[in-house]
Length: 374
Image (tube, rainbow, N blue to C red; front, side):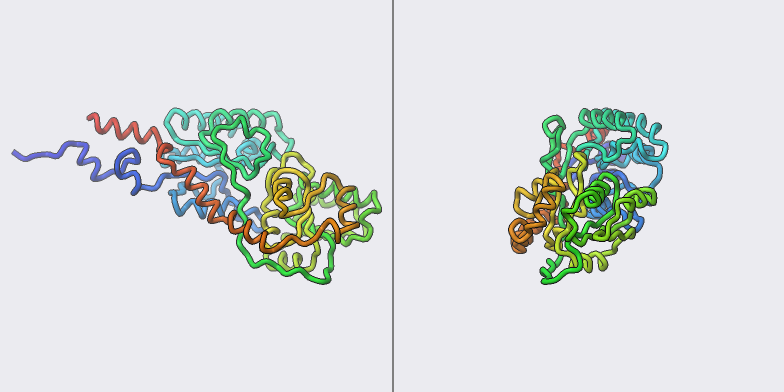
């Protein structure tokens, strides 16, 4: 009589179950949202692509660029242990947004029932766009209920005591060669990056137009405007001391502008702002930064890495007595901060908080237990 091995042994030779002893040899599947064809467009924020790149070192990223939104996550659930959601409150503004919201609720409920972990990265205190704002607040409340772990780049988050398992890491800064201060510059103030209404450019242009306090300041605004209409609106407040370049600035052009500018200014006035990729990009080159006293700007100001202001009037006063109020930040101090908040450190932070053995999919463990009971 031939001896046949028990079914469980035969199955284990063929399959790997995260809940069993071979969990360490099989990488967990993670869906990184959102990754769309627009993500790869010139001038787009490369933040999510960097996150994907680093997470691929520790996880199996199961998704590719797609226009299907939430539906694509649902279709790939069988491959997932973790769903990693970014800017999820803005899903209602996307293509077929009103249909995607109920799909999001279905996704979250399914994950909760099957043990798939929900990780929620909160990038903004509230959405920058007021469109569909009530529905976005509802999505936010739903996420507060369903997220297993939450992340943020700032301690200034207004709901930090209400979200579950909040982990905070400063926005990562790329390690680059710090630029030397120039004795003479073409511009006093450089405002750069994608130019959208929530970034306060209109308010700043209006202040400069109606006040004489910045008359002696040469100002350059360089970056692609969110729309031709917005660019035209800002032009209505144009004065001779301000120059507008409605164009994406590549790395080489940006470094050139940094070298030709004395200070880099951020004009954000919206309470929705928590962090800024452009802020960290500027800091990585060691430029003297002036920003609003809110979100990550406030925190970096308290750390002595940048200068902050509470109003444009206060900003103008600081510039009038720049030798006293705007001395160059110590380069070595900036370098030490960058070394502690590099992209590699951020990757380690994410992997540590997403790879905890306790978060292995309950659904997979249940399947493994069922096999053992046979």
